[in-house]
Image (cartoon, rainbow over all chains, first blue to last red; front, side, top):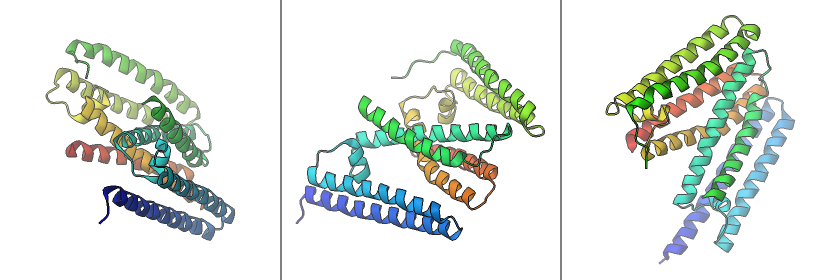
Length: 143
Length: 142
């Protein structure tokens, strides 16, 4: 019979496996779609960045299984998370949502004033990612 | 612990809110009148006015008729208790979670020659709709 710890580790490993599999499938499907439209360089960029992200999740999972006592960021990437981690992640995503929606409104206004908004979603994507990481680090440090 | 709200706070808060809105909307509308297409500036003023009236109604309900105020009213005027804050945070978290994959999708759509303005507009309204749906669902569940 499995103990609670063994069950939790088994569940965590299975969740990590499915997380990595799903991420790989999504990145591969999107990269194929982009490559089909003729943007092969962009597809290669997507595969590279997706590969780096998947590698980060795998390393976080390995660290968690081996060391147990790890940082909040590692727990969030590899799971399982506790109540405090969940609250931190929720608040970080909330700040990201506010920033992206605000940025989109500014982009639409800028378009009305004659600016080119072709790059706006790409800029907002990176701003959103940076906001997510920065707000998570600040909230984790504060709480 | 939430700060007690008194009805005599409402006129001051309403005046500050209207002042701030005018300070943002009027310069933007003037810029749009100079540089924007057609009557976009007029639409911008009307949109700002409708949003301000909505905010005032919410404020009036929160400060003058607290028994009738909904979670959405309290969230709109930042006068919510701990439960309202949790609902708002979780709803905005849904928006944040959706924003990154949708922005990636928008980048891909623009890369395959979709109209950038239409994509940015659709993305904005999709995220606002997600916020309203998530807020309604979480507010009913908790």
